[in-house]
Image (cartoon, rainbow, N blue to C red; front, side, top):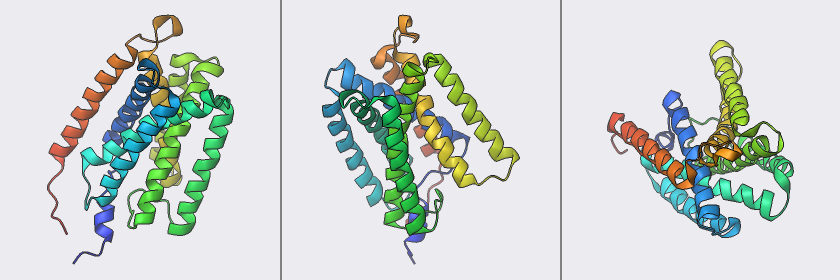
Length: 253
């Protein structure tokens, strides 16, 4: 008998090392692909945001309509939240002139509101036991907000803080390692640590993407947005393909 709960629980990825590696790859690709559309192709932040938000809604509707977990579909939504988040953040910070610090504070507030709404309405912030449409919608909105926030934070660290691309990546990478050690060595709430790590992997991906794509005279590796996006897309496709190969078939309930 289908109670609707198991289907929703099966629609999200299990949290482990492979999850975080794919998350970093997807968010880094989101940074370079978003920049490719808005800057390299000169479409602009506003138009790029509309295009990528449209792709996000399409992928989200497909995910919501699925009856069980599909790695390719799940990671497509993660990727579209990342690319949309990149151009949305750039539109807020640059086109609207809010700046990285102000944009980051606004996004922190939005993410806090979404998580508070989720906690109040669902009585949980669990990312492994999502059993209602409302919970899944809040899950994806929180991810979109965190990826948009991560872009602003990454740009702030790289451009305004004086750390540069490499310094920003090293700082955030160190914070992520500290969170991993805390999870392993302490009894700090795992849901809290998950969302903290999830937010931080986005600026890590943003700074890593900038490090890969920016020219040498600006502290980057000069792969360009096209080259960086191609490399990252190939890595993500390979990892998703491996996840699909490893996943044992599940009966449709």
